[in-house]
Structures are given as C-alpha cells and as structure tokens.
Image (cartoon, rainbow, N blue to C red; front, side, top):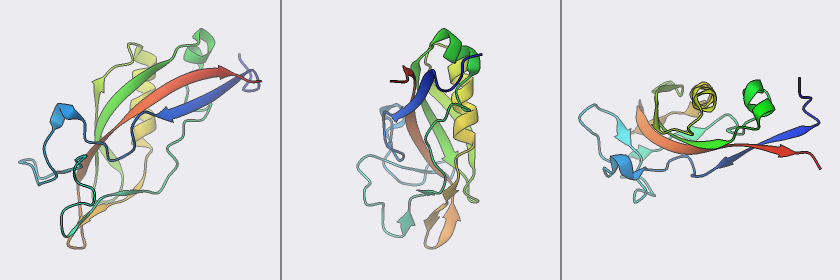
Length: 143
C-alpha cells in the first residue's frame, strides 16, 4: 500500500467547466432532446439563460485516484460530456476521449457523478444543461 505521503495526487482541468467540445459543436440553443448545450461562443449565455454554477470542489484527491493506478503510476486525460440536471446533480456522463486506461476512465465517471451545481435556469426555471470537461489524472512524487 502506498502512503499518501509518498505520492501527491493532482488534478489539472484541461478545460474549464462549461467548455463546448468541438465533437458536439452546436450553439447554445435548446437541442432536440431538450438539453441546453454550453458553447464556447456563448459567454455570456443567451438572454434569460444562466449556466450551472459549481457548488462542490472539482479537485481530485488521493481518495478519488484508483489505488492500483497510483501503484502503477498510471496517468492520462479523459474528456467527458455530461448533463447537469434540474436538481443540480449530474447524469448521462459520456466519455468522448479515453485515457487509454480503463481504471482511470471508470474513476472519471465516478468522480464527475459527485459534482453538484446550482442548476442552470431559463427565465428562472431550472433546466438541464450539457457541458464537458477534460480531466487529467497525474501522480506526482512529494518533494
């Protein structure tokens, strides 16, 4: 077992929350599935729309990092797309680009599902919002 004092775990957001990935490059208008999509060009959002606001930390801790991945010093970036639901929880997490390591991909889904937000709104009413992030898993030795 590796003690947390021998390895420091760090998360680097490759992209800020609210990143519109080019894979689904629609502007921020309601799409056919009724989910608002955050677009790079939509800052500020369209009139009457407020994007979700993070309520919980999105920083990976040693507890989030798979222990076997720490032992093997596995690292990688996972690009995900997810939906912030009307109650501020996360649903429909999809991996758009794998890290190439299944443990890290699985840990990313678990990690993102823990995110909590003040939900997005349209004219003051909660709405579902699709957004994405790149999550980088890195193992660094303590100095």
